[in-house]
Image 1 (cartoon, rainbow, N blue to C red):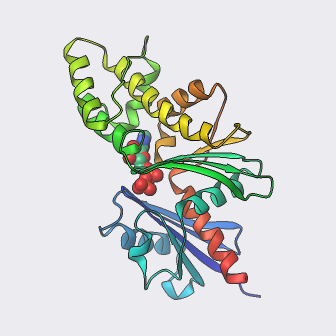
Image 2 (cartoon, protein in one colour):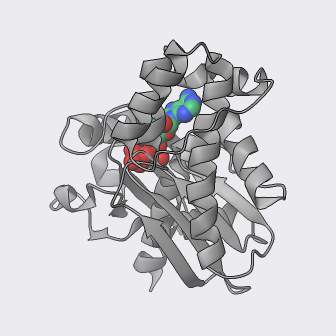
Length: 263
Ligand code: ADP
């Protein structure tokens, strides 16, 4: 029997991610374009993943879209599914023992509880407010003049963690500017910014009930070791960062595409 190829695409608020899967088990190619919904990002991500796989659109048997902009892909995707389902699916594939998923992307943060069968039993999500999301970190990176990729390094150089108490991104930005003018180190402010994100993420996790291992973190913010450290300290336990965390949703979408096809 010839192989079945499925495409998962995650049209995010800040980035577009694709995965091509062979027979629902083997990752053939992946792509990430640094712009998301409403841009050329989704189309470019599809072209890039097809080029990496050496395939044409016609070679794909099923395409499933997820992410904030998933509904913009009508005509391209065979089906759309929520990010919750896709992140949970991707995390379960990578870590069969996962029971808690923390996903922090550009626009929202989620905590998902998963049972032994891999089904979602509870979830909480913050998509109302930028605080506690990647957007908050993007704003702070700009104010502090520390590139996102260096935020983790700066975090671990902090000798103390500043208090960033504002619960709104706009007020927190003013708070950070005021702390900078008072002479607080940028490192201590970065650590305080990460603690602020961690507090919000952990409140979502706790609302899901008791925290059951393994705890897996995915989404773009999982690439920031400072944010991961602050969440571990806030939760009081180790968390596992998914490999290529930003594409976990696309992976889940490609897996669910395969399930749809063989139904
Ligand atoms: P979305 O699906 O909404 O586009 P992602 O899961 O792709 O969101 O995550 C985007 C967020 O990831 C950005 O807002 C940014 O804060 C963070 N991020 C992206 N790349 C990096 C990096 N190299 N280091 C640290 N953080 C990153």
